[in-house]
Length: 177
Image (cartoon, rainbow, N blue to C red; front, top):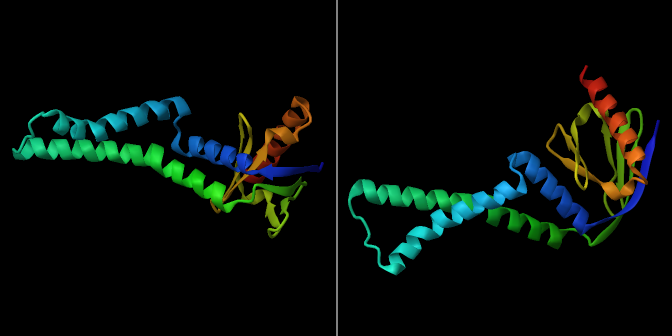
């Protein structure tokens, strides 16, 4: 069986793929990521606000060390959950074309991705580490760390999507057996 999808990939598709891979990689759903970010902001900004409000600084060794560690922990959380993803999204918007014609073909032996203006991408099923269905599409991760995205809108209906997911699952399980 061969599945062939021809569509126009947009910057939004790439941002959806980044969001899906980020959620899978960090194993934290967006709502909890938001709560962690708020906690990190409190930790990072709290000591600075305390100084401006007039809370006296502690100059004894354990107190200063604790304050610095709390502040650094807050800064690390803010960096990891807010600043780094914002920079990555900005990089995706800046470096990727707004629209690109893409043809993706899944055969019994290989996956082929042809994007206008880019070299063809051929992979065997043995190189597919995982195919994860997400809310807005399907994420393919490969053994070398690359990731590819197939937006949900390329499927004509839910039956085609389910059939495709079954096909992909059988190919991946067959290669690992």
